[in-house]
Length: 211
Length: 114
Image (tube, rainbow over all chains, first blue to last red; front, top):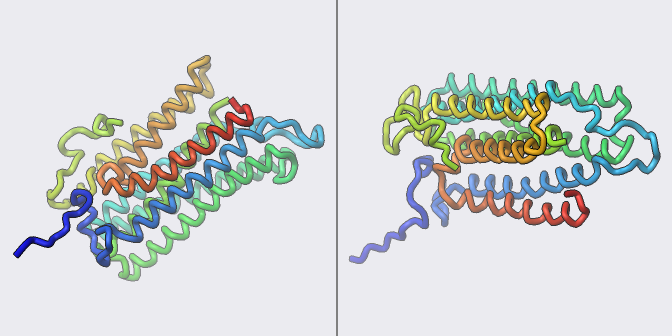
């Protein structure tokens, strides 16, 4: 009898060992969806970054209506925030590694550490926004401020949602619902978390560091 | 990009099919391998920040862009496992990423940002 087995389009990977429902591609639909979502997010943040770059030095409609965002940047402070978010990517990948080994305690430890680092980043952003506001730059003060707050605010919302997802995973692990068999959920949240990190890598360089 | 340059020693890279041990993962790198890459990325960040304190002249902006791309690529390839994962995921992500570059660079050029 002829072998009717259809060869996969790509070679097997170690992630194929993760159990999921059979799909037409042989790949996890959830993971495909997440990567497609992250691809679309590139377009969202691309538009926000471009808008800021175009608006940051535009003359004010009302002259003297407050400082430009770039004149208020505290680079040493933002550098620490960037470092914190970068390290949260490391702890996230360690959480994914731990759940793949079935190590629940390590998984919870790294998930909690990642969430704490994310919360530290958000606290820094709230502080930065507060300082800007006290210096006279509100959301509607001028077009530079609007573009800056929209860009960094959208990123902050993404980080906050990531923290909620991490806390949910921590709870599921504590309740015994997160096992090696459904480790993919940690990987999916991890993909989202790393994405918000790489978006900040771009924002930090393009918005804060490049003159 | 050669991500092996950072974590190339045998104990850092797990081979396919090796048993998942306490210090290893079955996703390409061991925990120590990931930590070494994170330290490398922290070093890159420190170099980036140094451009604020040291005047690098006209090379500052190109240098910052290159360092940004290095950090971006390492996180996507290693931490997000695209290097080890199915190429379909890379294509999906690149569709969005390159699409954004293809759209917004012309937008910036049109409005004479550069």
